[in-house]
Amino acid sequence: MVATPKKRSPPPQFEDGLILSAACKRQVAKGVRHILEAVSEHVDGQGTRETPYRVARMYDELLAGYKVDPQALLNEALFDVEYDEMVIVKDIDFHSLCEHHMLPFYGRAHVGYLPDRKVIGLSKIPRMVEMFARRLQVQERMTQQIASFLDETVKPLGVGVVVEGVHLCAVMRGVKKPGSVMVTSAVRGLFKDNHATREEFMAHVRQRFEAR
Ligand SMILES: [Zn+2]
Image (tube, rainbow, N blue to C red; front, side):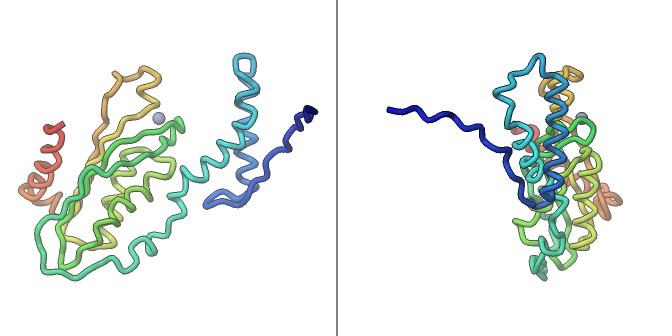
């Protein structure tokens, strides 16, 4: 049996992605290579050889929310109804990246609105959350963006959004107690002006806090 000499594989070629062009991916890979070079003394060079390429491809996926067309997302998903009670979608899982450290924050979003003769298809709300999560974010802004987007597109009587997030930049660096959750909320319309409406929404959200 003849052992074939191991060929050194050529550097992977990038293709244009969802959000990053091939040139952008090369630039990301270059940046990651610089980080690895800076800490090379301590790092396994063999194990991280392909890392710059993997990371460059990964960011194309993690930041794809910038590329979602909001109108396409809503496409024909608005329905006329007589229903005028609160609609709440709870426990929407999300994963995002904090723009300060580029580390993940993740958790759950709870979205409620009071329809004004129009409702949006149920599956669209989690997709709306994902569109804003797959970006470089701060949780406060993401919460506001979800509320504003729903408010502007569905034009309901009111909107409430509560987001619970665990931030790895805090947890991993020991800044906060492990497992501490950040809670942000945004309200629009009747959720802001009418105490009973806001309380009804918050009671639904709290119910799940207590059930945990
Ligand atoms: Zn951070």
